[in-house]
Length: 452
Image: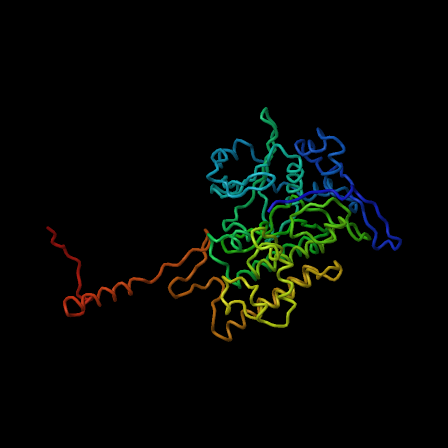
């Protein structure tokens, strides 16, 4: 699902007489790209009209401009790669190593040396489409923001490449490799086995923690602005991490209610007040999180054009089922790939939490820290219910029956069936019918078979 961008009649400057609910208009920051020559090119070579449409939404930041603030925080954590080095590590950006593709470039698997040791580490290399200025602006955003924020539930940016040559601008980003792809891949791809309910709860809680950190745990607020299932990546243990900060924006300054900005994001996930009026707040991310919660419950996309008209928009489709007092109606929206003993009552509690996140009034939506607490309680209750009944299986626990599944570094693979005992019994029964006696497997030894 591609991102969209459109302007709501240009920038708006509004003031509320109360002061506390006033709106700050987005202004261009001249220092965002001052830390490197390659980044400063974003503010030159493009006419002022186009810059004002696409430039980073920023505002006066306490004590310094955004660019100076980021410079102070980023330090020397990021590595600077050469284009030749990244080209070699991805075998010339081979399509065989391409693991993702978006509107702003392709992502390839590669391997680079670890400067702290002699080992080689696997990485994901995102190459910017050289024909798009919007992608260049997002590249700047990612380097600036991911160079500052550090959290277990945010994907780690290892370094970047910025080179100019006769072929044009080369802009690349190097991330830690998330070997289990994205939540979108596991929810909607039939080539991968379904995630268990406990794993879905774990992923939701991890993603909520990442958003809570951005909104509440730093001395400045960051609005993700494009939260969706494809931007939730999974590592080998199915720990979730947020990725793609290209559309991220600083939150409103103290004393301001929201940012007034052009609308960007993905259809089906953006909050209504943001789409209709361009009013951006942290509660916009909370709405998007509620949409993803329903994707986890139903196994359906936020917008699916291949379904009948009445079922294409997820939130419209689930509304009559979740508002009904009949539990059987609610059960019809549960992902059919989930076993009933896995989700039980906790799915209804997650739906109730999603409804709070999807409140039409932004102030009525919970903060992400409150969402984390709610999901933690739901997960604990679900685990206790499984322990009391003795049914189901815990996360990471292998199923002993035939056809069970186990999680591994490369994804979810089917466990080998214990079929030898069945084959042995079948041979014994056939032998009993033909030679009149049961085969003694303890004294059996392989031998040659005479053929003509």
